[in-house]
Figure: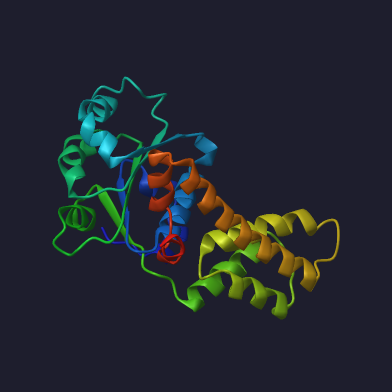
Length: 240
């Protein structure tokens, strides 16, 4: 089943229970945000979130198969499994476990998939799958997201301040969410000035660059792979 990323807000949590959700495409920043959005739909059920990589599943397929077929690792059927960096290699395992998810949810993260990809075809046509393509968002998409975040958090800004945040976002949801998080610290204590907006937006940019440098210097291959899997093409260009 195909679903647009914009339609996610309209779906209730029961829609995602017992499903394999495929999030794929060039916009890894959007994929990360949708991961969080889906997980938040289940926050009242206190589901257990587990993140693994496809390569770990392929190395030890019996672990995940037993996980779902025998239920030995379940805690009262309260699990959301996110499998990252996926390709067609994961299909065989998905076909084995898809009918035994009960109320659990599997989220598959992948990069760009061609039309003839087995994983993409699984996401689009299997009755137990939901497929959400994640393309680069337009300026209008990001402005709508920014406006919605300001409304949700009850933050009132001038048009100029909103424009500053938008222009510093690099069309990325994660940057906007970081700015909103910092603005929440100010909104009840002092008036939010243009200077505060400038400082927060600059700080977010510097923090991201420092984070990239620290991860690369650590030389921890697993951390580097996980970080890169969550990066946008914009950030990958920074590394290159």
